[in-house]
Amino acid sequence: MSVLVDTHIHLTDEEFVGLLQPIMNMLRTLNIKAVSVSMDIVTSTKNMELISSDGDVMIPFVGIHPQSANESKENFTDLVSKNVNKIAGIGEIGLDRKYVSNDEDGYNRQKNVFEHMLAIAERFDKPTSIHSRGSVDDVLDILQSYKLKGNLLHWFTGNKKQLRRAIDMNCYMSYGPILVYSKDKRSLLRDTPKELVLVETDGPVRYTSCFEGKTALPSFLPSVVFILAKTLNINYEDACDILMQNSQRYLDLVL
Image 1 (cartoon, rainbow, N blue to C red):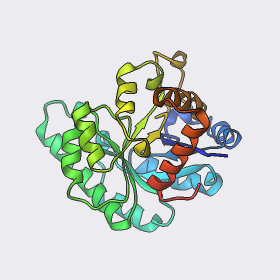
Image 2: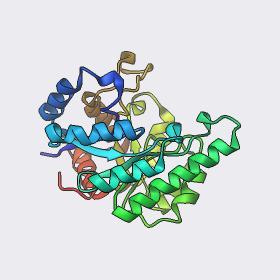
Image 3: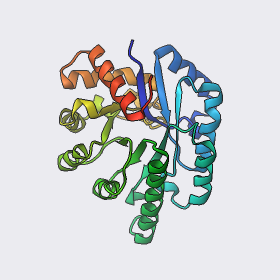
């Protein structure tokens, strides 16, 4: 039986406080594993703590999100060095001008942090989970300078030209609950090679146009896979098999 992987969820988000054990039990019941990404040093540390009790169903990523670009790079590097054998990947990292408005210095600081995160991923041979909203070209430009194991452009929001460029660079693209209602996302999915497709929920994001605006949980994932299978004109079981193979290759893990 295939294991589904939620390749991008924020299990250490404050909105999940008090819900973690039910979520972990949900993952076990539904045969889903969750890649828990981080936003900063605090959430990275929390992810390291989670694996002691729930490492069977959660896969810890650590990273500094562009929204947290003022975090200490040195302290983060120290965290990774001390926990490198526990860490499965580096993320959520990336670029986003939304958080710095017209502040070019702020955007350059994001780039500096992003490059530092990529250097760590390259040094320790870890996959990455990348935020690229409104900055796909800049992200891809920077990625070209690094030799990395696997790069995921999570919640891909680029256009078809950018998608082709990302495909040429062998990046993975993850698709989430938006597939349920977005024709544009389904069009991008059809243009993505099956071997580069992954799925995610990005919980605790709320999807107001589907799932009644409820906090995204891993239990949403089968619905995402159902729409993915329908969009790609394959059956559900084949979609699960493809996604498990892709997840294993991306993460370099046996699930």
